[in-house]
Length: 160
Image (tube, rainbow, N blue to C red; front, side, top):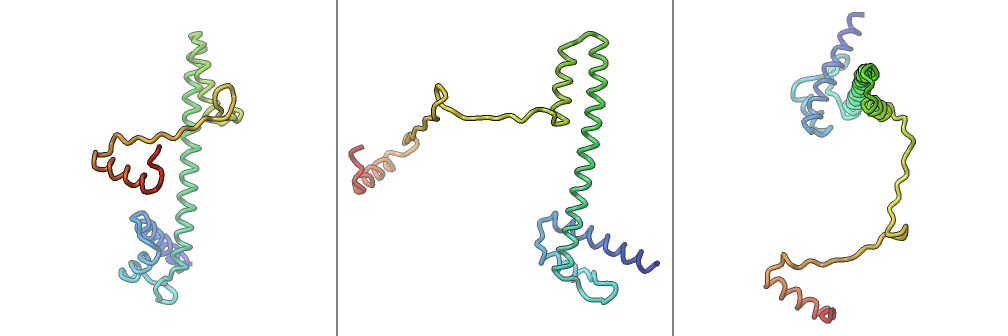
């Protein structure tokens, strides 16, 4: 039993180290090399850890990050909704209808209860969007303008 606990602790420590290095932008190979350099080894075999183990460690670390982020977001949403409930209660008590309506709108945004919006880009009168190509040569030096004119002439486009 004690052996399992020490193995579990070793895995947690290794994953903490892996996550620190990953967040410092180390590649998986660099992490493997860093573990070898620091002497972190498999408790059962004494061998250095390979790419597969470190990849699995990183997957577990990412899953943990996602779980914690999701829990944090849920907690923040709950706090915001509780605050809005308090604002609405006070607004109702003071007959402040605009604040009540704004609170309801914010609550709707937080819980995602709005119907999806459909956005279409159209041109004037609902027609197609008109595009126009504009060439701005104002930033060119006089020498660059002369070079460009020569190139256009050589390309057969000098009559524009």
